[in-house]
Amino acid sequence: MAEQITNEPVYYTKNFGDYSNSENNFVTNQELTVTITLNEYRELIKAVSTSADKIDKIRLEGWEKDEKIKALKAENASLKTKIFVLQNPADELEELEDDEN
Image 1 (cartoon, rainbow, N blue to C red):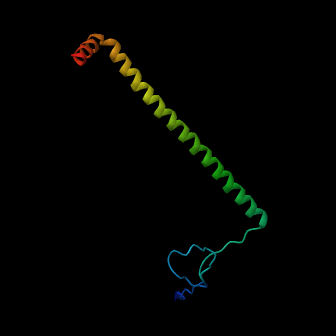
Image 2 (cartoon, rainbow, N blue to C red):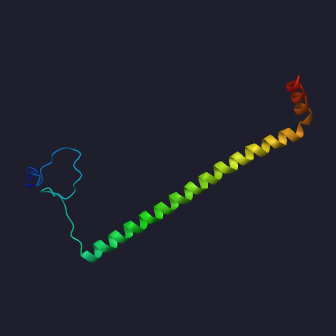
Image 3 (cartoon, rainbow, N blue to C red):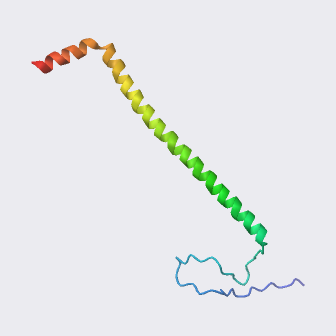
């Protein structure tokens, strides 16, 4: 005959005041936990901080490139305006004469 599996009720070892509790240092009865050494913890922290530095560096480079793109778009628009004015000098003269009258 097959063995019956019973579920035991889960009891929390920490009192939860509300859902916005930011503490993550509790363990439930049926939760799997892992123990690491201090050296492993230090390596983990080192890897996380290195990753955060890389992410910050990439974000900064992206921001700088976005600023350069905006500046180049503005320069491109002004150059297009200059080209248009230089290609249509008669239109400009007519507008100047109309403004004077």
